[in-house]
Image 1 (cartoon, rainbow, N blue to C red):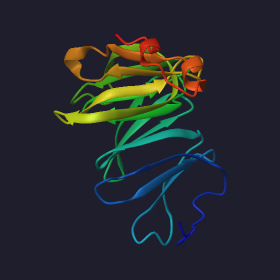
Image 2 (image 1 turned 60 degrees about the horizontal axis):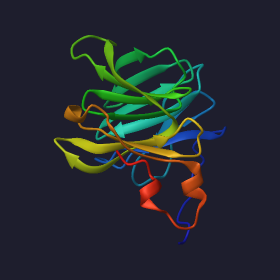
Image 3 (image 1 turned 90 degrees about the vertical axis):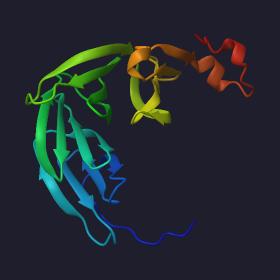
Image 4 (image 1 turned 180 degrees about the vertical axis):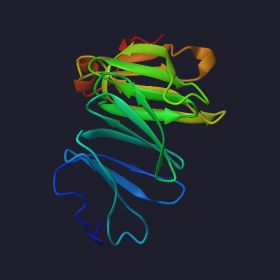
Length: 194
């Protein structure tokens, strides 16, 4: 690998980063409360917004940007304009989104919330799963949704994989405890497969 270019995005540490897969725009957030972006050809950054709260988590679902802050507010952005704000009450440490679902990691729980269409900032919780940051939507896409959700267990050292399709109600597929992760040879019989 060869470094092609380096751009200073923030004056403070970068907390989160995400990419708009449709136009290549890279969004970054920092403890300074700012969200900035850089678009191709990646020459300079521009500021989307600045606030008092640290933006700790971000996620792009196509052209839709989601930001989550230390106060528990998830903001939904379309074309770099605020569409909705959802006050989820607890600090957002990790974030994902697909269709109407928002996946957030709070202190010791992964929460799956369904945004209610047409109502500004209204949502209902679909699932609360024991876990910590980070989280990722993984697996094949079926009906515009990733098949699985993976995240750290409550110890922060193991992994959990759950089914993400609505009819599967976020069933656990497996939990990989830290004792298995540390070993050189995985033994699939010890993965707590369900």
